[in-house]
Image 1: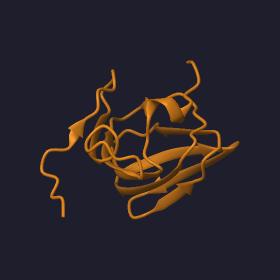
Image 2: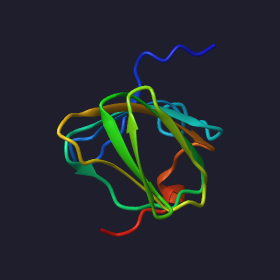
Image 3: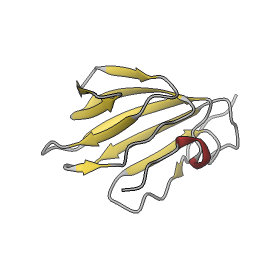
Length: 118
C-alpha cells in the first residue's frame, strides 16, 4: 500500500498546475500515471501525438479536447479516453478555470508525449 500525501508538482512554464500522484516523476513507475490538474482560463498547449492512452475526467469547469480533427467540450462529470497515436490538443478557452484528473497508460513521459512545436 502506498499513501500519496505529497504529489510531485510538475514544472510547466505557464500557469497550469500539474500534480502527479503516481507515475514516473513521483514514484518512478512506468505502468501508469495519475495526475490532478488545474488549467487557468484561456490556457492551451501544443498538439501532441502521445504513445500512451489518456483518460481525462473533468470535475469542475470545462475543457476542450481536439482529437484527430474533431473538437469535444467536456463539462464537469464528463470524461474522455484518447487512444495512443491520436493527434490531440487539450485547452481551456473558457473564462473559468478547469479542474480535472488524468490517467495515462503506460505512464506519461516527456519522451513519449511527442509534442509539436508551437
